[in-house]
Amino acid sequence: MYGFTVTLVQVGYYTHPKYGTAGDEVTHFRTDIIVENTLNGPNTIYPNINCYIVDDKSVKWPVYFIGSPTDLSGDYFAKETREGYLVFEEINEESSMLTFTIEIPTPNLPVKIKIPFEYP
Image 1 (cartoon, rainbow, N blue to C red):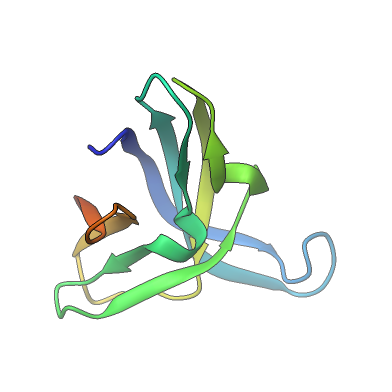
Image 2 (tube, helix red, strand yellow; image 1 turned 180 degrees about the vertical axis):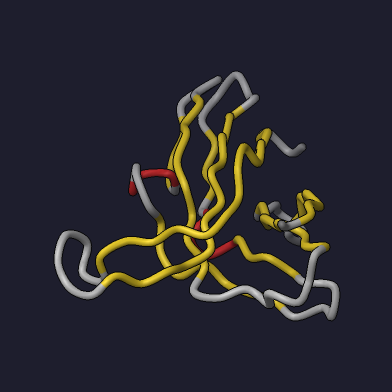
């Protein structure tokens, strides 16, 4: 939609050292995604600031950090595809129906791509 295809590959909790490679282990909610620029020209998208999860109580959970690769956001060449993951600080564990939402800026208003999913 609007020049991008976003695929939610996998979701779940992710345990990792607090400071990348050091520190106590912490657990966050992670979404693995594939982003593809479907245009025949360059296009730009910023999942780090235009992405969130909405639970069944309409609470938004913003991105905590972009995992690997960190260049998931930015300018994409024509037909370029990138795979990576986004980490969310917390998700309402009592909600089983969630919606991964990414907003794509357009000249008028942002267009929202919504991908509903259940967890666990």
